Image 1 (cartoon, rainbow, N blue to C red):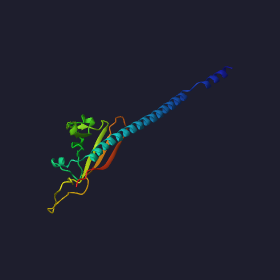
Image 2: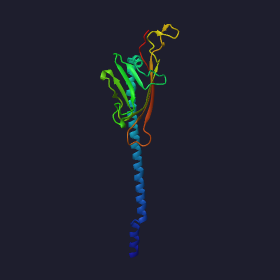
Image 3: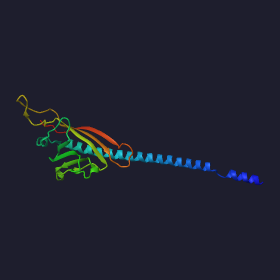
Image 4: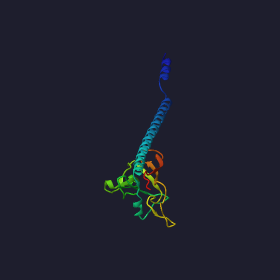
Amino acid sequence: MKIYMNQRNKKNGFTLVEMVITIFLFSLLIMIVSDVFSRAQQAQRRTVALQRLQDDMRFFINKISSSIKSGSVAYDWYAQQTTLISQSGNELLALTTFDGKKLLVKRGKDANTVCGTDEREPCFLFMSEDEGGSWQQASSNDIRINALVFFITPDKDPFPLQELGDGSLGYNANAQPKVTIALQASSRVTGLRGQSPSMTLQTTVSTREYKR
């Protein structure tokens, strides 16, 4: 009877090896669940960051496109500058709005502009005569404007009569001015593993004016 009780007690208990294996398996399960949760959280953050990036870029493109369609390229402004319109791309876009005001658009690349701190550089800037003629930030602090180039054609105002190469009077070009916007931006949201979400947009917008 005594021997039987000892054997039964041994069968009901846990050995040290069994406890170590159980703790190991439980810890492994916790690690797997934590990794899955972390990956899901990262995926959600990346999706939200990409959505905010798309919304910000869409707002910028719509704002500039509507200004181009309702206004015109400010050829007179470029004529007064030392750097004229370049066929290889321009860092600054000058427009004349429908009410005759000037609107300038560019990428702010240093803290001496208006973006504020180094963490907010580079940003998207615009200057409007309607708002005092000072540079203002238009992109959110979560967005990094890596590249912004404007291709303007034709490079000279096509509407005024001017002297051509053969001495006769004519027009510089028989075309409506158009602007191609090339934009590359990325998200600067912290806490994301790997490369930050980025996107590249390019669109061409023609002005509606045609004078002859």
